[in-house]
Length: 83
Ligand SMILES: [Zn+2]
Image (cartoon, rainbow, N blue to C red; front, side):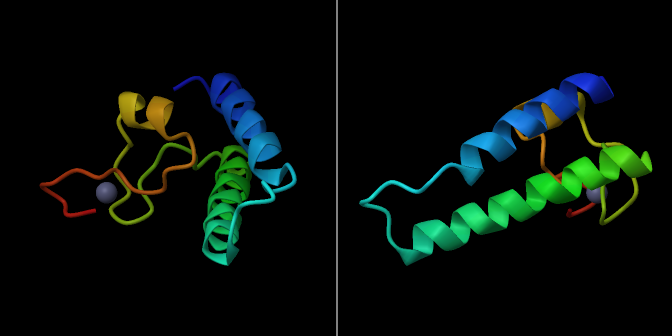
């Protein structure tokens, strides 16, 4: 995963999540958005640290396709490692 492309995706995601909530959304939606926003912030921090794209659970590289689909993902999701 190209770090610049990941950063652009994450910044787009952060802008979307930080937008004012829909009038119809309830508290559980807001909690979910806040959790996603925290993951995005953390992923951006990891880009700065140079640890982006590494599973936080097992330390293995995260699949590019998974990162492309979920740029803020923190675990590799590999069934073999149970992450
Ligand atoms: Zn893992």
